[in-house]
Length: 396
Image 1 (cartoon, one colour):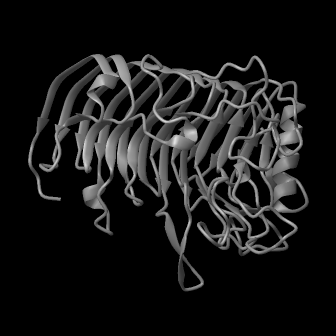
Image 2 (cartoon, one colour; image 1 turned 60 degrees about the vertical axis):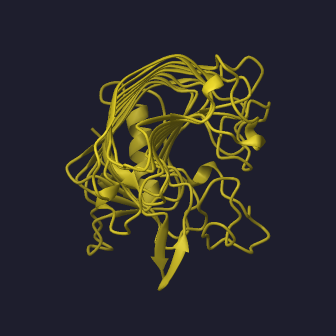
């Protein structure tokens, strides 16, 4: 076991040194990050990092009852798989990464984030960032704003963490497979008071699976997010070079890449979106398919929102977005099972795109102003079984 407290340098350097030592060990490839100790600065027990901790394959990192915080100098992730990053145009597959929190393990964003939001957000215009107006750096968000970013990783686990005030999505996976994301608590609000001013910080999803992800379990996701709690988004199939800073996806797309998103289990998602978005969202377009997905035990807790904000949809399937090719063709979204949903949202289960060969079961809708199951275009829904869906009026 390797402890960053046993190494010298800045906080980022000490953690990186422990990871490097573990990756070279033939016996114990485990890093345990406990509360920070420093004779030069004994009053601070949390880690303040200036750049992402890059994780190689075959390593386990345990965050043991401590806090890791991004510094105001950092424009980077908390953790990123070591195979991807700026200028890395060829991503090799990594295997066997474990990132685990124990006790009060917390990842926390910067007090004054340099950049927030996704690549469609201009800093200082739509989403906050102290880099706004600096011509020498990018003026939009990108993949560096994501909290935990894995690309082309097989056999992985991310679990046991509280992720607070992050700068874009909390966890984003690209082309990953055979892994588990579990027992995560999110705590963010889409807007945050910085130096006495309420600032927008957009695109604060909890867990995002992007193109090419498959055979992944997501479970026990709780808390509040600024945007969707869990989102499966398989969009934008255009060829592009990996490692560029013009996108919220680091892995790009090369000829031969598998893009479909499939064999995903999402269960025990209890929380709400402070921005009034979705609890679970499935979105695909332009010929990329989503299939063999189970969404089970989703509980909309927006009644607990201190702002009185109602979630938009508990479970949303598809959308009509012209920039992403409009509605996915019938047959591209199939074998979806949605069951055991408890909703107070504006819409309980909403199909806004197409859906076939699927099942919607046991939906409790507590909003009398909407039905428990809706489809915007009945011609786009084929061979979908809907059973045990009901409205139980309850005041918001």
